[in-house]
Length: 88
Picture 1 (cartoon, rainbow, N blue to C red):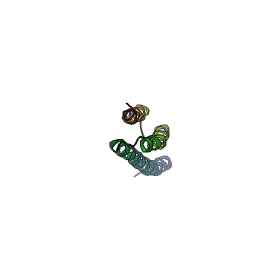
Picture 2 (picture 1 turned 90 degrees about the horizontal axis):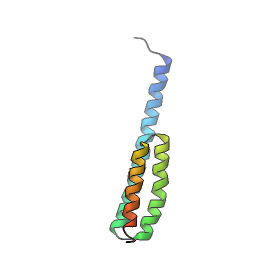
Picture 3 (picture 1 turned 120 degrees about the vertical axis):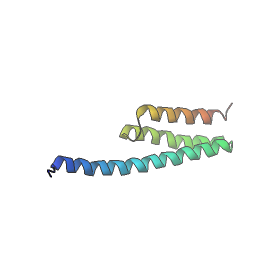
Picture 4 (picture 1 turned 45 degrees about the horizontal axis):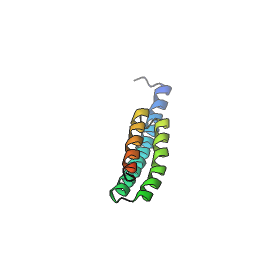
């Protein structure tokens, strides 16, 4: 069986990226859950602060490739819409 150095290296990199992406996505899910819980409790201040932490994390995850750019945009838009519903 032929094993190329480049294939072995790509495999190692893929494992690292996959583990990093799993961690990042888990953090995003936690942030989203925090925002939604604050909205359910109608605590606009907590929702705004959680949103302020979660949106940059989503943007960074998209920049690093953990999420597609449009997926990140959709998540951000929906969260913002939920938080803004408290003001109305």
